[in-house]
Length: 315
Image 1: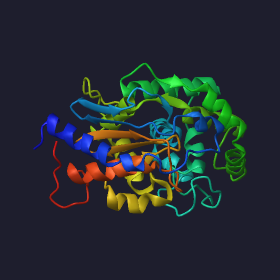
Image 2: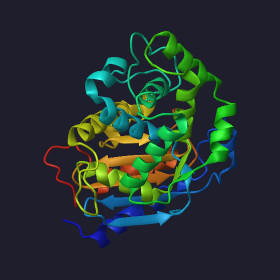
Image 3: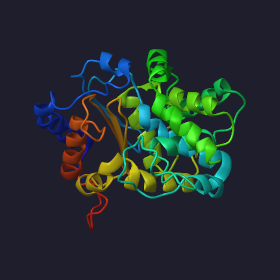
Image 4: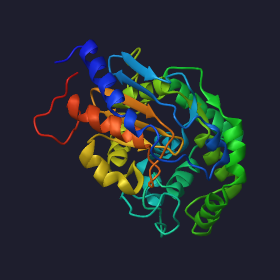
């Protein structure tokens, strides 16, 4: 079993080995504010279930979590309404269609990690007006990250709201199919607000650590997320969390992950750790090019792939 010093060395090696990808990929230009980031930024953090964190690079830079918020939407929808209600509206299967496609919508949405699914789960977050519901989301993120320093990136929100016509059409289509209830514009507003939450890699890796710890706090062991909600969330992250590339990613990396077009990826190794990478240059699927490389390498060097028989990991 490796100690923390050896784990740190393996992480540093993975970061170094990924430097050749520093200029590979493009930022998500369809949200204008995302073009204003330093395209070469890179940060990484790993938090064990014992609450120990190792961080590298641009670890303090806050970025919009974008589609990683879909994990929070799902958790809160399951907590607020339970699986029967949620999965009457959202399915559990992967899709070959793009994350912003309208095609995987029939009587319900194919899964909660495409945009239509996340707009639907956002509609199931309880509260009064949009501001009250968003404040509940912020409170949840602060609790899970163990940090009060969770911010709302208003510039990203405003930029995204001006260019969100496709998501607006998705929201209205969901309303026409009676999949979502309530005002389409308010639900869309909440969805975009959630995408515009600003965190750094340390904070996201701690959220991953909580999920890896069965939903229990890394500080005092309190149950912050019901273990059945954790099980459901991680299962869906494993099969659907990396867009159309989820199957291949699962083979190469082998632990539940979720990406966002802001450039972050969060990964969870149950019983061991949460990990987060941030590198804003994306591949054609909307996943961080350099982040995928780092996670694939540490999966191998730290024996984190859950699908390798007899693999107990190095923690």
